[in-house]
Length: 163
Image 1 (cartoon, rainbow, N blue to C red):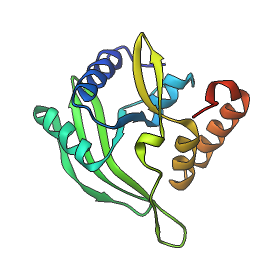
Image 2: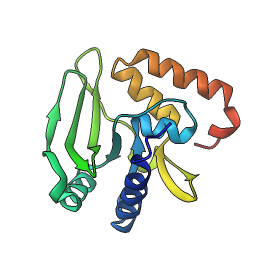
Image 3: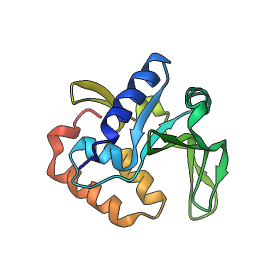
């Protein structure tokens, strides 16, 4: 379930990002809620490429908490920025890569091939397809969440056909 203050922020971000012509998608817990998962997100995650992250950073200039920068952890690397959008935390990740157990980096398929458009509250929203969301959770070590997504996919085959 989405906190009420998230809905106008989601709609505004979707409108602004689409107007900029970006390749982008909702990811993380917001993505899962849009697919029908029962959970309460704590922030809004957007995935894009580096150029898209830079454009979103410019769009959200007055809302910066952490400026856009190349962020690398033991498991993930991306162009990352955090923003406060009317009290809602928004995290933007561009050109995400995940580290394999052998230390090399996995470069995901092109983002435009991983996006699924769905109608949500009357608006066409770009969301990360669930097979890719499950793989990202697996690579980040979020095995319980990956398992939940896998189970959901098994229970909803018709909703995910053609992704």
